[in-house]
Length: 264
Image 1: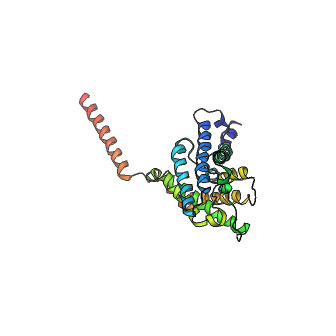
Image 2: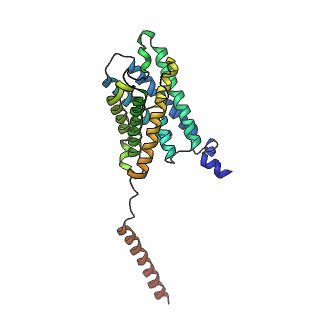
Image 3: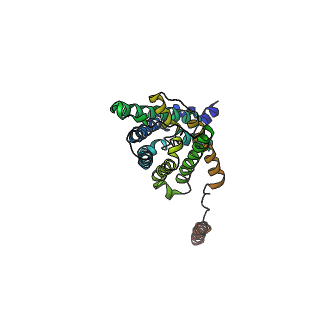
């Protein structure tokens, strides 16, 4: 029974070492920041580049602030990719997604409250363009989730330690890229929590399933592709290093033998 609880991650609810509650607060705060500032950018009559920069910088800032606490998922698609790759437990992933959605909703509610209704401009809610079918929208959101989670895995590969210093920037730029390429067709959600936050505040649930299924399926596919085909293998043990230790050990043994002869 204990082993089953460990695999599910139930033990994390009781362990102080896992810092689960700090991580959940981090995911809440990260999504709050993202939706507050990115949705705020969407309320202004600017072009797609302005919005793309706002979302990319929002993700960059959120990961920089909370990444050391929770891993900086700030997105259910990333969390599901990590779950499939075995990097996170079932319990933790479920709680992450819950707090991500609550944080995104709170961020959207805050900007909605602070701005007069005439400035809301739909609060940046994602929707399909008039000539974009649900299937096309699903495909677009799938590839948005794919490129985002591939970037997350690539930037956070434990066998590429140098890349972790640029991980927040790389992930933020992948979000910017996704918005630059597709914001005019699906709103470039890439993030189910981001969309559910605006859906609740605008009570607009049209084609909402696309913004969950697309990015999450893309995230799962990215996790499988990276871990099975692209992940950097661990560096081999240096032969010279092992020979060096072997030589030192031999020298110590010789000194012991010489000392024994001296005493004899």
